Image (cartoon, rainbow, N blue to C red; front, side, top):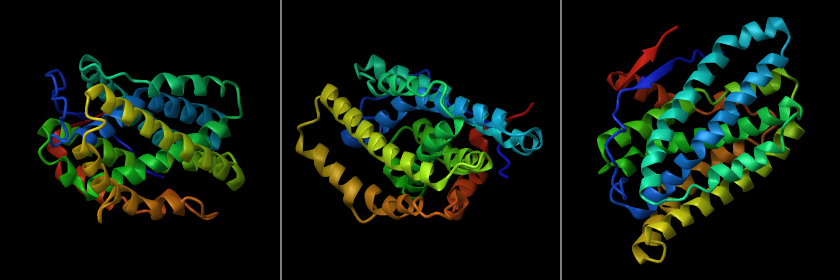
Length: 272
């Protein structure tokens, strides 16, 4: 079991943010903004999935998972709130969040289904966020030149995503979720997540007026396909999820532990 604690981030998100807040890079800013737009709706779904899954367990297993589930829910609720504040600035800049409403429509179809479906979906998304989080923590220099409060926000979020990546997965296994269902949803979520991320990023660039600029896509190619690029460094850990004996703990979260230990002054632990 993972001992998860809830942390309150010590940054002020009231002051406005620059349009190209991420290292003055239009593509990087649009990509991170797209991800942030998905978080309030997505993380509420993850919270609800873990709550439902926990209730389906027999009492003795509920006790086993109770503390970790509460930590997971607390962390995700904090992420949802912080990114809601961040997203309010994006809305003022004229960006249009289409990802969140689209996700809500898909979630409505899942009302009343076997909770293992929602846990399999959550575990798949958590795998994506975990491998993306590890990439950010490993390549944190992509955030150099950003406002310190925003760099701290993204690295804190990344550290916690890596930290709680096993919770939904373990609940799914505890409810006798099959490898077949896990793979079915992983394939679907891979397509849905990548399509949503691309659509929202392109929409952000279009609204920003930088979609057709050469520098935008030059920077995109470097970020995605370069030696330390996102696709190159995340393909192998993405593929490992397909193994029948896979478990998220097999993928290191040392960078997460190190960041949380070295930046303890950036947050306070919420108790009680």
